Length: 192
Image (cartoon, rainbow, N blue to C red; front, side, top):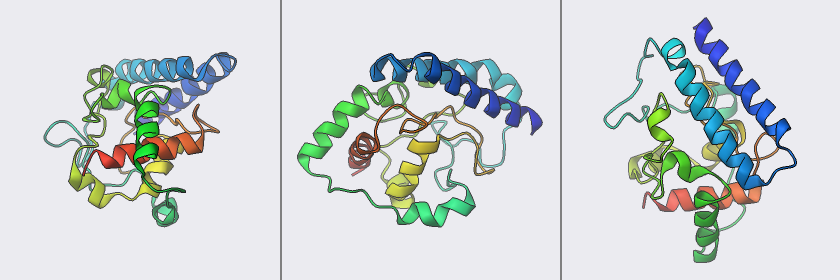
């Protein structure tokens, strides 16, 4: 447990440092570097941090148990109430897809079709979320997913180990909240 916390702290510190070092760089470059940092740190510490799989770790396909929320219990009710600020129109979904495949960096881990099979996925201790799974979308609310985009998935709930998902929405991340919602709405459309 101590090693897991240490690895999470290192992931956070690494993400903070890389963001500070490249503040003047483009958002696309930041997203690529953050994904690379995340994957690199997860691989580097996977033998230590995830040497003992927690209860519920992994299921068919390697994706973490979709029934367990990644949002901490104290923030879950509030997160579930948060709604997207706009409807998922064809225009919004097209913009979301462009963000998903581009500046958002989502494609690196989640793959071009959102199946959790991106190029960086094989380097992570837990397979990235498969957004084409309709069961996942029945269990998780959009506000929960936005919480993850803003805070990452570093094991904050105490029930899910850190996954390598760093914050991508500002102020901790590199895309705007509007961009995050558009990418999120596109992700949600993949499971229908």
